[in-house]
Image 1 (cartoon, rainbow, N blue to C red):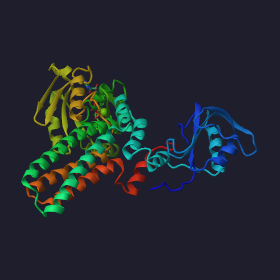
Image 2: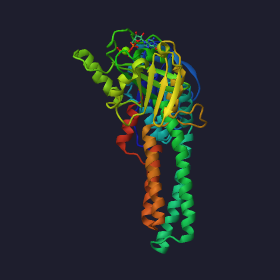
Image 3: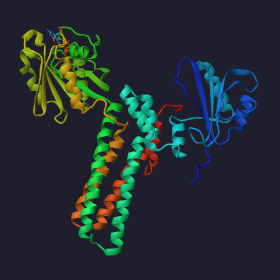
Image 4: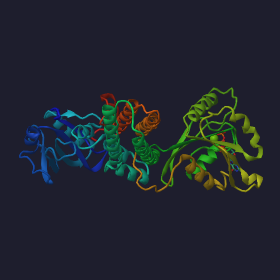
Length: 448
Ligand SMILES: Nc1nc2c(ncn2[C@@H]2O[C@H](COP(=O)(O)OP(=O)(O)OP(=O)(O)O)[C@@H](O)[C@H]2O)c(=O)[nH]1
Ligand SMILES: [Mg+2]
């Protein structure tokens, strides 16, 4: 398959605002006329040259470094020109307008990466990893994105796919030659192979989960009665004086979000309005928003004043059932109870003081545990929900295949193997529809 001729695109590749250097990037199949008009003689491929960028009248727009990467050895696989000028918004804008005047079209968000993908320079998981690398909020997240970008994630998926293809070929040959039945001897070998594939999928799933966690972070929503010390807890967790704390019940009305990092895990903490019946329309709206936030939490931190913790018991019935809960008995400095953490089946109870900070570390550890985050997990690669979903579907299909093996229905078995293979192919982009592609790339920023 040859790539179709595409128009030439241009964008400012550096972030908006002022900086030492600003870059305009151009990609297309024929840059000849642009090179001539803008630079005079064309630059030497893959050499940095200091040049003058000219406008239509031949006047200097700016001077800077030019890098020219002829196809196919470039990021997009097309001819790519980079103009490194001075990083001012106005001068970059003039330079970009000049490129448009010379026949370029303004690039859509992610269009450079999309072309790289369409020209086979990257697979889909790698293209997504570029966005993840740029967006990463912790060092661990950046490292995992880098691993995906270098193709570690894709290599695992390809390896699994190869094993699946071999298995399918084998099963399909069995169908062709011997009708419906799979020989008993082979049955054991096939079962073994499917079991091995399931194990490998589980390993990938664990690493991908860690990667998704690093990418998206974990959201803990603080809830409780007014005055329980929710805002004090947010301040204690963040180590900053973020939320207003007063002894007046109903102080917080708006949602307050803060992103922190806990040993590499991006943690989003949300402080909310105290839950109670209120006639005040502002407070009621605050409580409604608190409930919305709770419904979307990864974990709820239910804070009570340790002196009358039972006052919060009534709230329990109203919290979303499926979301993990950590109960916090706050203000232990007033009760003299030592800081502690106890786990009783699904519920964790932490005794702490948001004021003195006693017990806050216990809570931090528990949040990390609840998130399922393992610090420093070797070989974690960045992954997205859609990857996790595809892995799950592949897993389910393989589990079905295992069942069909026992009932000796070879055709159904082959079908499930095919389904698993397709699900994995969605990760790297071998089986992906146009809609998904445009959704993925449009979430990138311009110039990427
Ligand atoms: N002694 C003591 N006082 C605390 C502690 N945590 C909070 N307080 C006090 O309790 C009062 C309420 O604290 P907030 O953090 O504003 O409580 P809140 O749950 O956010 O209250 P609302 O926003 O009104 O729902 C303030 O006077 C705090 O100083 C604690 O650990 N020990
Ligand atoms: Mg508050």
